[in-house]
Image: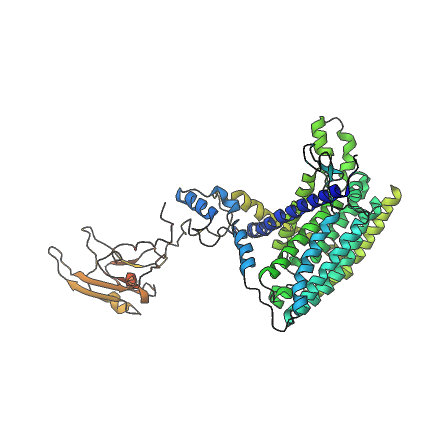
Length: 391
Length: 167
């Protein structure tokens, strides 16, 4: 491994940051679009099929041509996709209203905190263990240098993730407080209570991978959870995964637990008074948070960048040595594509659950967290400890 | 015990998820084909909306074998009309035993599409056709007579904004 100068390492980090940001800003708008379509399909609708009028927009013209030919448009799945551009334009161009009695500075900084706290978590998430790709030799400064799969795969990665995820609560609470209005305040307070409650089972359910892998580093944990666990470790992982996912829904304020927003009670919750791009940041932060929760679930429970979930990869790998080498490389080696696919599947699950389960009442949300999830996670932790002992 | 198990193991959630998942797969696989429609919503402006047989659309006069309106100008419909949108004046025509309308005015603006005129008519001279895309840019287009582009003898021309019949 060649020695790397400071400039080179900074440049590589910059490239990794850009890659991650590109990934986020490709996945997030597509999730927004997928949410409309998938929710529609789940409820036997078609989702968004047009943009403004049926005559405007690229797909509008294409679809119209196909209808004129008497055919159902082949672009059917993507009808309404340009509506995303309209959404972004609307957010950027809309008048940014600040309430007269609002705390201006806090009102301004709350969406920034919310958004930054959600994006920054990606720093410690490694998409693939080891080298993601190596620069070819003709590249001027960075020729021959490897780019690792994560920006900063630090030894206390999980701690960083959980810490920054908690900072995200500040964004919501401060937004509710700074709006100086009753509904946002109630939404903010509810979200504070809910997210603090669900931090506990979330962290406890993440202690299972910590216990079994014996590390806090994201790449090591995902590797240990994919390869080095015995077959009976599936059970604590499976329970842990379900509990983690439940808490993840609550942490991202998604529909079965969307207390802070609660459209039918609190207008729009903490972002009632927000408009324009400030609202856009909250909106983006929600989807980035979904991606983060999905990435963590994929890394810790679904086998990370390996193919099979719940540690089954390590169990099955010894029996697959007879496969041809290219298939062996595909099935048994880590790929960033598998990680991305798992994230996308989990994002689909987020939308699927939203389209299925109605909202819980506020006391039920709290009861689920304190009465059921925390005892269950403790039991699960004991189970994981037994597995660890037997390993 | 059963209740506790039900709480701990999310059967009901799994059931709900399977239902919506089935819908998703069905609609996802057929949304593009549209041969067997799985979605409950119709793609209305593109695909013409199916109408019930008793749908009450716009008033239209039925024609006899010669091509003249069957109307004999008895004014039964005009009397039955609750909003009084029908005005009829009768005249004569060579070779026809009954009277023939020389003026048959129908103010669609005030019509409530109740169908009383059809019930009152003893000669089957009026029907309510299946047109419902009746919006127009010009107020004059709602005053229908025996002549002009919008008349009571044939269906209204459909506005340019709807391309259901463009194909």
